[in-house]
Amino acid sequence: IAGITQAPTSQILAAGRRMTLRCTQDMRHNAMYWYRQDLGLGLRLIHYSNTAGTTGKGEVPDGYSVSRANTDDFPLTLASAVPSQTSVYFCASSGEGSGHNEQFFGPGTRLTVL
Amino acid sequence: GQNIDQPTEMTATEGAIVQINCTYQTSGFNGLFWYQQHAGEAPTFLSYNVLDGLEEKGRFSSFLSRSKGYSYLLLKELQMKDSASYLCAVKDSNYQLIWGAGTKLIIKP
Image (tube, rainbow over all chains, first blue to last red; front, side):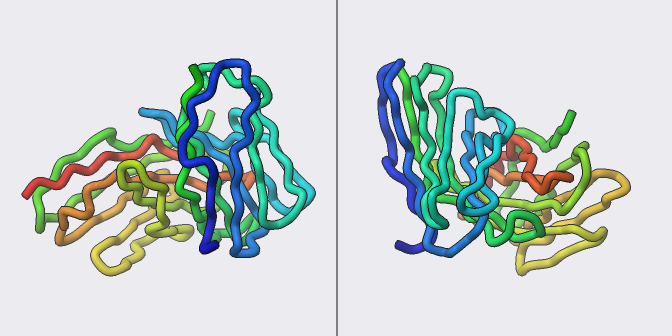
């Protein structure tokens, strides 16, 4: 693994189904983030984690949950998917929870909810 | 509320110079970032400004004026590979990034 990986690359999901998007980083970064990116809008923060064992809500957390059992993994779960959750999801990490360290992004997961 | 404004789309000619502006209103300021995002790919870091002035990195430069809530990204000697979206983001008082919608830059030969 080099950097951040996400899985799956893309997924078509029926509404009402449960789905977990996976994110793994090997840079030993403390902070990790989940964003969604929709056409015409900026990246919007869903949830974040400043360090293993802690999580926080971002701008658009409803319908999503996360966990951070260890430094490397930060899965995002949609408990019961709805069509408005159709989006491209990016996971990111940074070396510090505060400060100026840039965020590094995974390749993204394109999710379609029908 | 918090707001980041940048033009939706710009067009420039190969070999020329282009300036992409970004204005922001945020709760607190802990730095401004520029990212590049090619279509279908992840954003990648370009530059960071926390003090007023110009930061130069090869063909790319970024300027910040905190008093005016304003930044620009300057791209010189444009190449076709510079066709991408350029995202402006500000780190707010909670150290979270607030993102603009991005500027799609189209380079014509």
